[in-house]
Length: 268
Image 1: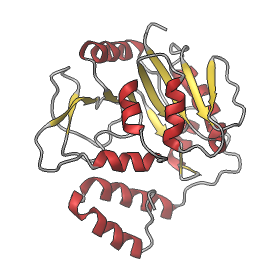
Image 2 (image 1 turned 120 degrees about the vertical axis):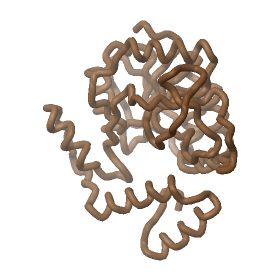
Image 3 (image 1 turned 135 degrees about the vertical axis):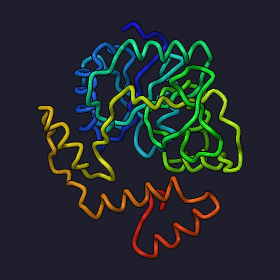
Image 4 (image 1 turned 90 degrees about the vertical axis):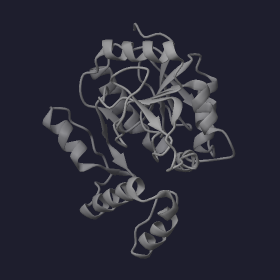
């Protein structure tokens, strides 16, 4: 592996350990040049994939504590943060990733988002293909796939027991919809340099993801896990739309109304 000072960390749980095996199988298939400094995090269930280091955090450990324990065992300055159901669906260009890391290290960036959501318009002083993350965009900094400077991931994950959604809510508290400033050292790469397909949402398979991998000849063992229903998908889209278009000051009121008609949010 030519990329130095970067680890791949997959934060998971015992119940999703089976997905971790799918993740790393696809990662090896489409990103095989990244074959060092790979870590899988769960509670106690054994996980055996050649070349992948397993970090067991023990039972009754909150999500942010999992992250903290894992980061304490990782020596590199930067981590490519992923979840076990972020299935890679196309070849990842090593040269593009090397160039991304060169930019990160040259400017000491603390956050480099590699997923396109939410969409952000603009430019960046760091590179013509990057976009600075404005302080007026909710979820501009999030816990989807990204390269984090390790100390920044430690910083946003700190505190008493929190799950990932609570951490993202805390990040959104720093959003000022009237601000014209950007979060220094935080950028988004709109090119989707890693092709990611979300495999499971709330314990259920995402149908379009399974269909995609079927179409390219990769068979995923679905086991006993159910598929999302049409109703599940519609609810997810509604929540996703609300999270990005509703003004910050209206979020609480809109969520109250949505709950009255049966829509639940992950923070409930």
